[in-house]
Image (cartoon, rainbow, N blue to C red):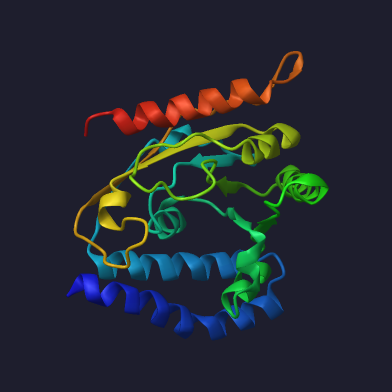
Length: 235
């Protein structure tokens, strides 16, 4: 019953909340209200699904400054999980094509989510620089450095774009490991399965040292190793 009901709730909850998104876009330019509505949407999905959530490592999140959260991505369920259980205002970095989806794209735009051009070249570099400027101004963001969902739940190699945002912004990266979401909702499926999802925050990875920005390959490896180690930990 829950497996059948959850996809319906995803769409229905969005449609019911969309009038509030419209009103929020008119009276709150920061996008914070829309982000809170997103959190309400996510909580509705999680409670409907009956999935059990376990979160560890909140104490590793730096306080009082913007952070980039780098998270593995094995399921569409990762998004409502982060909205529900990441305890601060943040914005997702989103491929620009999603902003063209009717209604959904409107919510992304007015919620202040950050479009990224993945076509390469100067357009991609400009979008990374704009994202870094948002972080410098105080916006914490979530990136999925694998670039797409893992087809089998295993951690894939990282693309460098999200890491470059952190280095350009000079802010730390908090590794986030989500385990169990692939079993709950595998890539290519809309059927939610019962299970436990565990989200763990790791120690921040610095992007700037005493001599300036740390090379991107070093930062990328440290973040990848941290997430990999957390995924391999026994419950």
